[in-house]
Length: 94
Image 1: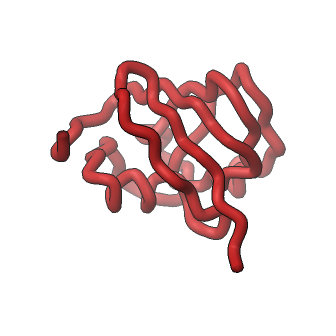
Image 2: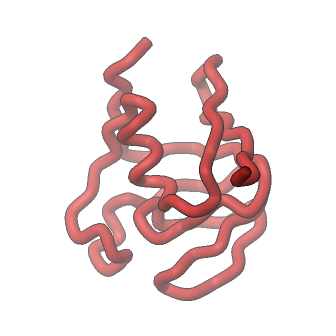
């Protein structure tokens, strides 16, 4: 069984469960959160967000990040429970 982590998003009451084997950007889309994106590999830097609590592994640019930090959602994977501030997101589900 895969370990899961809890995601809290600043300004959103609902909490989400994260799979540490999937990029955060992919999971946000599954939760009904449309985050602005383009390249999906960290180069364009459009899917940036603020890590307010927790830690992630970022594949590109390669880094182990702990809050507070900026990250790219397309290349970041949860390593603990997280709290994020999304910068360019649209919520499509209540």
